[in-house]
Image (cartoon, rainbow, N blue to C red):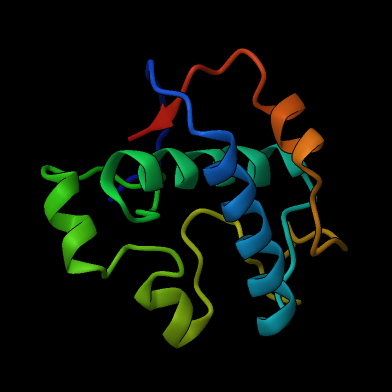
Length: 127
């Protein structure tokens, strides 16, 4: 499946955004992975996860196309961290990058302000 993001009208709840930001930081540290060198990639993915958490009740990967997002969220395979990430450290969204990935940055943290600033003007990010 191709990775693509589209702008929609939903905005995540600020609590969901903060929850997904904290989760992302903790998971990166725990797994020895890093955020992308371009933090706007990290911010957009976190925002997409927060939107799906609000909309679907689960942080469904925002970088994939789904015929039925609700069904996919219930099945859990693509809920973050998805099965490929948990099993092989393969993150389709480039949120969690391994040491050998040429796009990886040095950070395992991103502030809420950075997420908000990087996604300003995007009314929503979903497949």
